[in-house]
Image 1: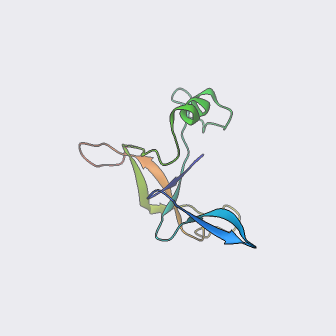
Image 2: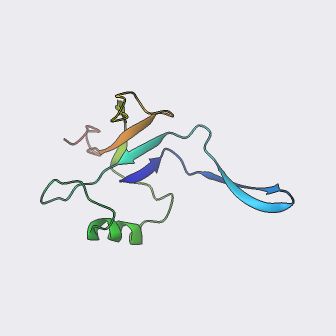
Length: 104
């Protein structure tokens, strides 16, 4: 699973007990999950998959996933409670750049 955000996270530097530390601001950021699948089997790829490993090598943090977007009609749901996760997260899905329709 790849964690996505609607915008790059802002990095700030502050001090705790006189020691500089960094933190991230996530105000006004929408979070999402992208679960890529094996193109041959349709099975969700694990973190140790060669495909995921190659994506990790090629993509830096804040890489835009062109052709993918948040599906605001499809929030991530807690499998135990059946409730929408808080803060709200959405599934990230591929879409056709020409028609803007979700690819199913």
